[in-house]
Image (cartoon, rainbow, N blue to C red; front, top):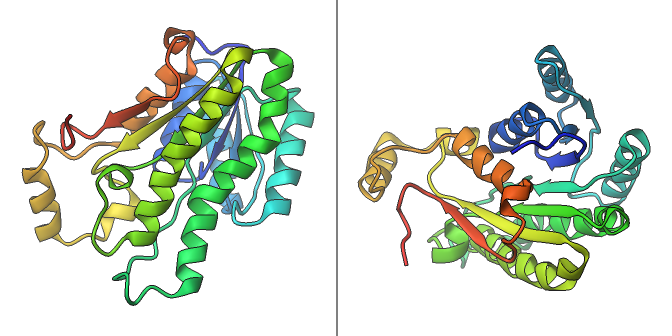
Length: 247
């Protein structure tokens, strides 16, 4: 699954799933534009990729800020010449029961998790159209498929990503651009590290494979969808959840 000659932009690249995706894409031969708010972590990741013989550059941005998205995408295209793989991974949670969710927390989650993906697609799809080749991969969630109590904002944003994925897939298919989503289940990240041990054990009981997933489990799925091996797959949601959701 060589990605040599391609350029990938990964949002939320400073940690967790985004970090793992960036490393995997670079290992597969892609040059990687790293986007996140934490400049120091991005710099460390650039060094890590370079030390392994890969190519990467950092483009600090807050995906909740439209102007930062525009300027970072333009800078990445100017430096690398194109972006033909986009991984919309950046995401946050602001959990609360639906009757208690503050409008600011609703807006923050929708803007970061869903609107940013739409904006990043807008800023990069032109480059893909010129190349007549592209891969858009949106990181959604099992909770965008099943819902989750206390996460009405998060579940809505991730369900919205699935709808966005299918709409874009239909729009750009004729130009040899695919758009797919990856839906992780319970993955060991900073976001899940704060869960209580009881909650983790309850989750494990729901996973037929009997283990929590790793960020690299998700990254491997992303690299597959970015490759020519997945050239006839579009508008699809690839579940990476150890069997938590079937059917």
